[in-house]
Length: 301
Image 1 (cartoon, one colour):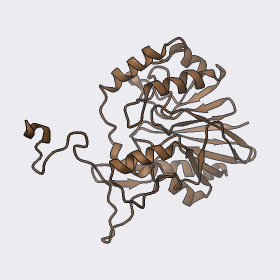
Image 2 (tube, helix red, strand yellow):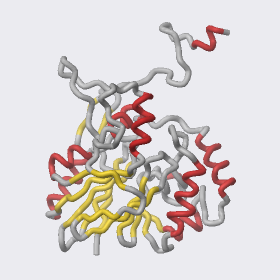
Image 3 (tube, one colour):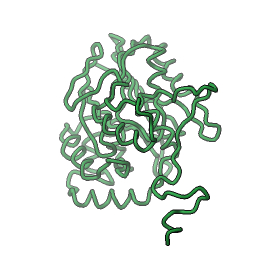
Image 4 (tube, one colour):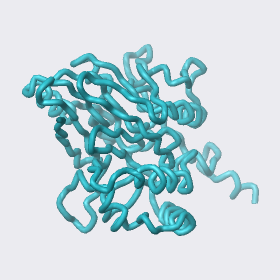
């Protein structure tokens, strides 16, 4: 028997979960949040301190801090939790591909490792993780990113950004190495193969129509009602819909800040000689400009 406690961060619409056995006190944390305010470029720990208070009040032992993927909308608090409570860190083995892509995007130094060794463990599809009395099955669910995984614990599955509440749909697929076709396989052929009564705990809830926050749905309800992908939705129709929707979306507010931290297992950039840490923000990544801001293709014409 296990319990799930959800924590919602309204600034990034992120859901963090503490999954624990109330008898043995064994616990894992899935998709934690380190607060970041972009205008002042400051981090703070109010969100993760709420989780810490819960862990301490319940007397839980944190065995693992898990990430479903390298998030593009918030910084992970994985290092903070490890420093405070111990335990180990894990994510999917596909993080290596994400690291390789963004090492080039951010022009990171040669010393930045793209073998995933920043995490204590990289999980393969189907791999079982033990956390005391908790048994966690890894389900590889790429598409949103090539490194996405879902975690199945008993009658529950934690889907990150692959599958959302049925009135919001599925995760976007327009990040580097993302693929709507791959996401269809992950959801339709893998997640929808789980029993209909399986509880689904989502990575975000954007509260469409202003409804109250929801953290949970079921596989059966998703198969019947998901606005992007139902059991009968064809691959062609989903890919067409997902790609068309992605073409209208703006970049996540904290895209550049979060990805470069999260591919390094949540470590903030090293201090410079002046004692300050700096994030790398590319300018006009897809439409290069000259020093004066003139687009190069425009000047050439």
